[in-house]
Length: 332
Image (cartoon, rainbow, N blue to C red; front, side, top):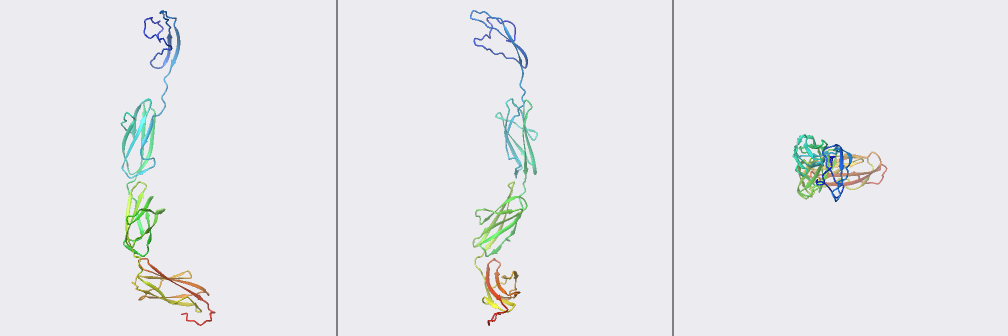
């Protein structure tokens, strides 16, 4: 007891199994008194002891767990749901999200919808216990609702090619992934360098629909399409008529001549020799180009014709220029 009055033999509170416990209210210094009673009802002299009772200070922050997009994330959704759980041994006083009070369920769970503004948004969640301790969660979420700009520089739409594959190139205006699908096939990832991308598309004979998709970090998507016709048959033939075969010549110049059979007037001819290129005009299916040999040696001459579909035909000639060559020949 905390009273120094000797208890009566018949008083309640006697215990046969010491020690008994005494409850006090609040903190401070208390003197406790104890007596013993035997089976005959005799009560002993009292014994006392002073005890100082202190109340421990609560300095532990509440436990706060948030389920939402990670800090630094991007999203294309204008509403962000903040769900979580808060708890504290001494009891919770409040939970707020960006200063707004949130209802907390008996099990400590809560949910709150935040409306995002364009750009970076800071979301601060604070749990406060009855002692005033706080636990907080701060994260920045960027709201981006604008789809990336996807530009295709090659090929042009409704174009025709004689190649079974083409390299698709273009640009994007922000960090994104780019995929390419031909005729609704499995998407293939394009290679990204800076703001440029490139990918190889394999074509089927006939009309092909190429779909490109760009997806930025926030999940916004832009698509673009190109229609390309693959014509596998070459519609022309190239012939070099002079020289008709590899030759040796003593002359320092040579006029190379050739023809295009079934010329549709859109075929181009390119001649390369000794590091130089020439593009002679085609007149009524015929072309010619004067070549100059600066020093005596073997000259490899390449003649390539290309039609609008990309189909190519190449003829090679080797000409040896030797001013001391004495054999009689008809070499132009």
